[in-house]
Image (cartoon, rainbow over all chains, first blue to last red; front, side):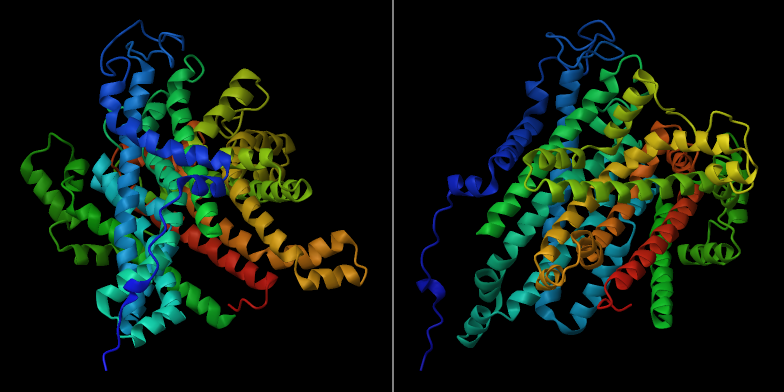
Length: 287
Length: 329
């Protein structure tokens, strides 16, 4: 007798309802959820949408914020707003890249560990635990200081110590899911390998990973800008937001906008990301 | 207890070994040449080569690392490229300032967390408090430190915002100024030291207070709706007693875990805050070490901070098991 292993009789997936998603997230959180794609667009298009050339002298030096130059001008008369917009690119996109990398690597390691079980799981779980008890920011800083400053080195150092969190989420979820009746039923029905993984296990893991990642964006942005503040990012002329604040620290009492404005934009990015994270969590947990 | 201590010491040693090996091996694969740094940029090649031999830089990484560990057991962390002093001496000189300041920040953070949780508990479901908490939680440490320095020091001149003391020549026996002031019979020095600490400690304490406060509030909400709390109320205990004896104790685990997470993040923020407030501690030393690629100093500081973090973590775990005997050590 052939047992039909046909999960294709499952009801068709309902179309994703945006309005319902945002309603469950809450209105304040929805601002974040809508804001993040906008920030990403601004980050990608940054070089083309700045009102002035960020690298050129366009006005007098040290002009305070005004209608013509929203964030004022810097020590050689460059438009600070344009530089900050470009800085969003240097901060936001690396942040997303780090999250993306950790999401992929971490969840893969977690999947392998959770699925294989036994000795493989034991070894991988130990490694994950070891990384998690590390004072990671500190070592990441030390690693960048050793490799030499630079954006790529910063990203690498951060990613090395960031993925285990995702591995832990996906490993725990897989182990929990493996024991669930619907997975057992599918196994008995003869579903194996990739099909079992893609159709029965992954859909259960993805929401938790997604929640984790969305709550994590602000953390990564904050850590990246912290490293940039400490002089571990790109060298001087690059408009990294953290480094812009750090370089103009001494002019706080004279030209406050120089250190404050770039830092305020990081605050805005993190606020949007945190709101979005809370919203995604509320919307997906409630479902 | 003994088994737990053994386990945590072994764990700590493993973590420190792996950590130092990662940093150490990275340092030996990069092009920057410590021998060149020692003899100076204009020294002839033979001198550099002799120095490489003297420093043992031609040996395999593992051998070098072994030698590093051997020296480490004798308290020798190598020589700083920047200050040209033994790294261990530098650390001894700068550690007290950071210890004093870090402990004050953590204490202030825990106090803030209590206030936060109490506020949220008394004014439930307040959107304003929630937004304020997300807002503070989204503030990069250098922005909050800058704003604090700008308003309370520069604009209002309420509090000092640079250095540890007004009297720069003061030097006490322990290096912890607040304690030294009392020890040498000059309480005004202790007061001055505390005043200098308020702004930087507040900058560090804010994120701790927010995160731990949120977690405490959530845990309290869960606990206070449990049946045993109803029983405690039912047998006529006052609400304060219910909250302190039954509520707080049962709710302590999650916020303590959050505290340990926050302490891990503290090490990064510490560098920033010390740099902004000109606090002459280990953080500022590290920032300067970064700037001059002073790798022995970076490695030494990483080991000291790593040890402190593991120590703090262990204390928190002990605290958790004291609050909740179900968590066995």
